[in-house]
Image (cartoon, rainbow, N blue to C red; front, top):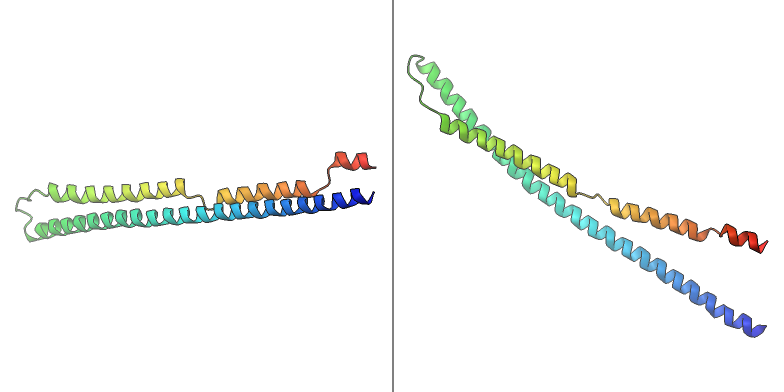
Length: 149
């Protein structure tokens, strides 16, 4: 009987060590997943800043071209309303193209950011699954509890 007790003791210690080792590995892997997601999210934020600033710069440049064009047209209208107006389609189209391209760039950048930004959602879901698993694992099994009674 003492031999059986002695042989069971190391087995429990091994099981506890293995369980503890598994839990440490689980939390280490979850930490690595969270770090990966944070790095990915930072990369997405950088991409959003670059595309957003590029789109804003294009829109601002286009607006400046349109304001200069409007000022020129207003000035020529005030100077002499009888003189024929010079064609300004080139400036008008340049301004509109810059504004539209800038808006499209900013729009696409924002939607790509929304699509790719995870915000640690995967890590949080994994932690919830792990917490549920640990809760189930720590509670005694009802089938075993009934057989012991």
